[in-house]
Length: 181
Image (cartoon, rainbow, N blue to C red):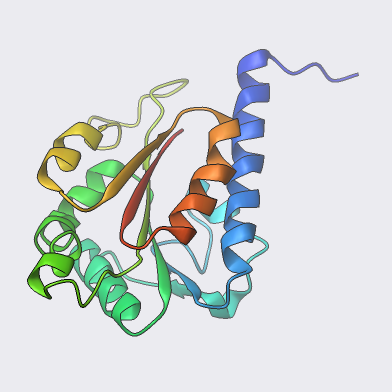
């Protein structure tokens, strides 16, 4: 019989919960997943989309600011985009769109718009192999301090994952969900 170390078991539970959450989101026909490695493999996030129909996944080049700008536009058109940033460090490249546009659009439009965008990002694991300093940052507190109208949710435990994504889907406005590898 294969024995799984507690840490490995927890990682497996976390991965299973993320896949279940993506499947839950995909039940809503308005949801569209976009980012790098959503249409093909390449990141840990890719595997969580394995059950999502390919036509619901929009593969993009490495252009983080454009990606979030597209997500805002899709949301204004009635879609619920899920923008995937495999590392939080990469989301920093879209900070302009997040802080100055997505977060402020309700205020700019005097309440006429409140785009529902789900931003999915991850803080890289430093064990068993350190991925480099540009892949392991957690900037939740810093970005939260710059955003007045965006929900930030840290997902540290597998049991938190599905309820948090369910809440993000129902939330009127943007939500950033921070996963921990």
